[in-house]
Image (cartoon, rainbow, N blue to C red; front, side, top):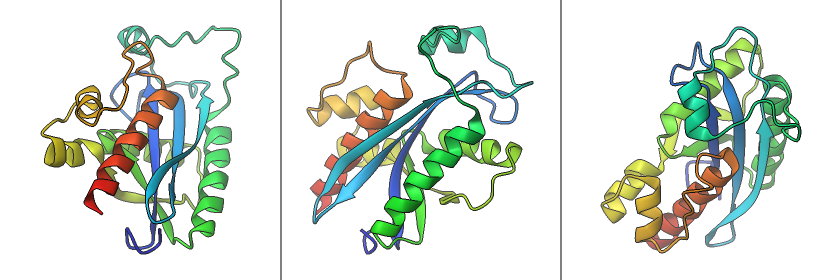
Length: 191
């Protein structure tokens, strides 16, 4: 893995948020899906956290309707942003160490959206030593557009014959897993 992306470990990240503005809108879910490599890319474990909205940040009703997130669901088991990120950093750092990579690089669909929210979350929680590169990403919108002619996640999945369920979409864990499948399929086709 360390020779594939300049010693960067690709980690798929997906966030579900209370809006579109990283500085003022809350993060509601975060998931990462690890990427394995043994001569070929494959989808690894997914880790998901429901997030207690950070005090003072906005949650727009249309965002809740779009994501179908019920903040009052009794089984939601939400944690703070800080707790979620500390757990994610630990997982990513262990995986990074296993592959002898120097940093992690966020893989996402519209990846800068997720990176901008992640960076704001890191800043407001005063977290140090993020394993993620602070501005570089690998984006499946670009990869999908270049390699399949499609830029919408569902359409890329369809063109690659990856099952996609619209009823499960907009859950951080589901979207991270689908994005990971797409990323692995596209990367393996380059080999």
